[in-house]
Amino acid sequence: MKNKTEKPKAEVLGQNANVFSLIGVCSKALKGAGQPDKAKEMSERVMASRSYDEALQIMEEYCDLT
Image (cartoon, rainbow, N blue to C red; front, side, top):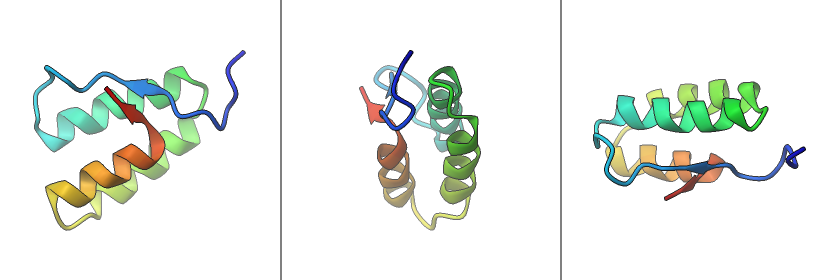
């Protein structure tokens, strides 16, 4: 079983760079790692962000973007 505090890998390279698509990739990675609460928290924080760069920084707090 994975450590629940470990950041899951989210494969975003080659994905649509649309922020909504990236939220989906990261959310799926978090849920797959047994962290559905973190997925919801991350999504809410990204949706409240003011820029694409800020959104990416938030996603990187929760997932290893690969």
